[in-house]
Each structure stands twice: as C-alpha cells, then as structure tokens.
Length: 126
Image 1 (cartoon, rainbow, N blue to C red):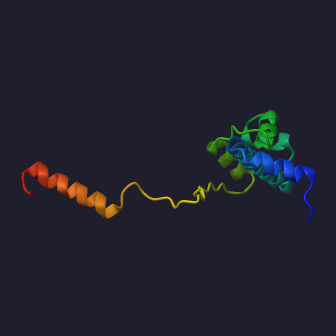
Image 2 (image 1 turned 180 degrees about the horizontal axis):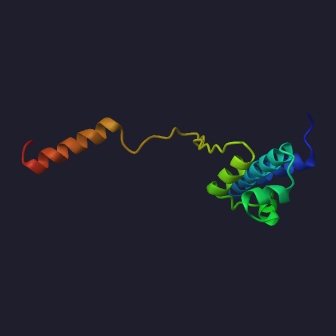
C-alpha cells in the first residue's frame, strides 16, 4: 500500500518521544470513549438515559464519551460498566525496550544480604 503524505508526516512526528507519548495517550482515551458510547448505544440508551441511571448529568456522559477527555475515574468507569452490564478491565503492559528490564537485585542476592545483615546485627558471623 502506498504511503500518503499524512503517513510520512505522522512517521516523522512519531520520532519525537514527547509527541509519540501524547499520540499513544490520545489513542487510549479514544478507545475508552468509543467503548462507552458503543455499550450505551447497544443498550438502546441515550446519554440522558444513562445519566439518569448513574444519577449524573448528560454533560458528564458526554465528557466520558469524548476522545479528548482524560479525567476518567475508576469508580465512574465501574458505575458505567455496571449500568451497561459490562465490566472494567485495566491492563498494565510492560513497555518493550531494546534492553530487557531487570529487577534491581536478584531475589537470592537480596535474601543473602538480609541474612548477612541479621548475622552482623546479632554478632554472629564474620
């Protein structure tokens, strides 16, 4: 498929780490907004209907369904999910880097240091 001018422009912009982070964040917010709107519509509810179920305003539902809104609270998302017979799942995924992520210390080293510290505190040991 041939790249458009926009594709080339976006690729260039994504080379900037700050832009790439904002772009990814916007995509995440967009996903939440689209899912809420789709679930609401599947339930046959208007924003006003859902607002009544949640004892909130239609404007708040509109904000939740706005791709630019990033003020979602977990408690509100749970309330929305409950009203729409859905569930909320939050997934943390490790960031893929060129270097593998490692714990600061291997568990056995940590335990060895703790044991050594205990021996030194009691006077036993080297």
